[in-house]
Image (cartoon, rainbow, N blue to C red; front, side, top):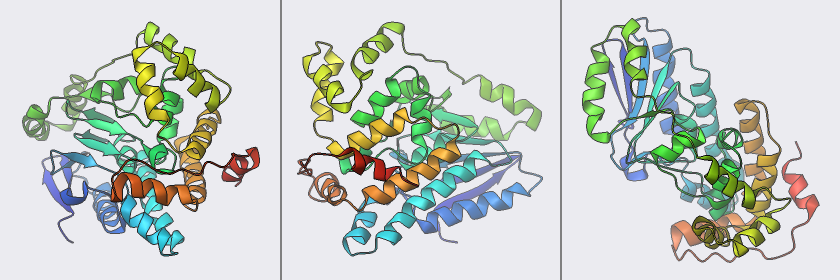
Amino acid sequence: MSNLVIVQKRNYVGVLTLNRPQALNAIDDVLQNQILDVLEKWKFDSRIYIILINSSSERAFCAGGDIRKIADLVRSGKRQKGLEIFKYNYVLANYILHYSKPIISVMDGITMGGGIGLGAFATYRFVTERSILAMPEVMIGLTPDAGSSFLFQNAPGFSGLRAMLTGQRFNGNTAIKLGFADYMIYSSELELFLQKLTELQPNEINFFLSTYKQSYEFDNKTLKQIADIYQASSVAKIIEKLRKSKYNWAVCDFKTILKACPFSLEVTYRAWHLKLPTQEAVLTRDLLLISHLIQRADFLEGVRAAIIDKDHNPKWNQAPISESEINSCFDY
């Protein structure tokens, strides 16, 4: 096994450290298989009571799938291979969700895409003051995936829809408000936290972790303002409300949403409103949506503008979007 993951057994705690810092721990088949291999073995290890997943890098927990690699595969006609990379992220998210032992995720630093699936479906979801979470897929011609729309659809009011349509980055406090995390810790305390955790007996762990739990919430005024804008019958009406709004945050949202892929906005708006009952159902739909979206020219153009040339000036397809086009993305 290569050193893409660092594996430690410390008393009753299994520590799995992601160690692909040059790629911000982006998940490919090799990294996914290594994570699954370790977790599968620990399922049957009676000495391991709880698992902690963290990163060797201060910069990122996990940036999700390797989008540049996916775009290269799609460009060369290997769309199915590109889709496989998304599958790696989804399989891992589903595995974490149903794992038989409690898992602590420490989403310190950048956490996006499949990193959300890896971290935000754990039993104990930690963030720090360095946490930067986001699902910015609308900016590259895709839609928030890896099961994230299940969390966004259950976020208070219309805050989740706003986050999906703007692709906004949010810090640890907001991650807790949106329902992506439950526990807050300062990054400077992480080493001591792990040391204390590994010194405990299993029956002491839950109380220890509970001391870090937070319940940050959006205030009613903020939720009302968001609803004033985002409770609308179409994306076009949301954009028009943003254009006319005097809220400071809405002025920023307006500038941001205009940079997003128009077709991605329509698909994302539809996905948020078509609420599904389970994370598994959302993951199944995510794969369907992504399989359609990576075939569109907007995806390669979005990757070019955001990741390759970095001019952040994508030339989106401006053709009118038909209802049948959107419907086809949701056609199982």
